[in-house]
Length: 197
Image (cartoon, rainbow, N blue to C red; front, side):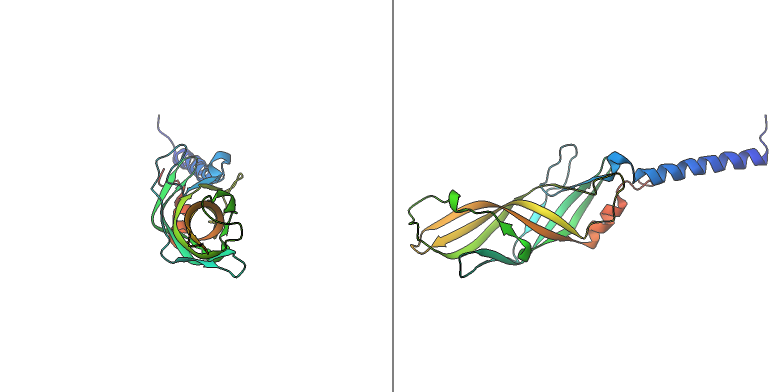
């Protein structure tokens, strides 16, 4: 049985409409809307890139009151973005941690050794950012635009010298803001791209 031209056109229109609906729901599906930003180098369900944090331009500053703040930035490379259906890897620079936004927890309870109560910190240096925690972005039913900043948290290692010349190395928790890069934005927009699935 031969089809008429109208039947062929109608069949194609139905197929196109179906593909358009599928493409529009791919990014707005409930489980597909959230994106896990894998900063720790691991994920609960996917293989991801090993994240590298370059702290060569991040400097701790010891204030007059003994408060430790930071200046400069830390570069985050090798990040995977994982959605319900897809994964995009960012091999280059994904984000930069702004040193001025770093807040560290009180670490005095972790320090043990031969120091007096009134010993003051005389010098501090950053050994490294030991670890970062994964973060979940764009929670909800519709995926948002790529975030311009990420709330990051993790642990960093400080080397501290006291007035009695006693040195100590301590790992402390921190929170900060990281500005995302254009490469991050491109990977975000390519997640769940219907042409790649």
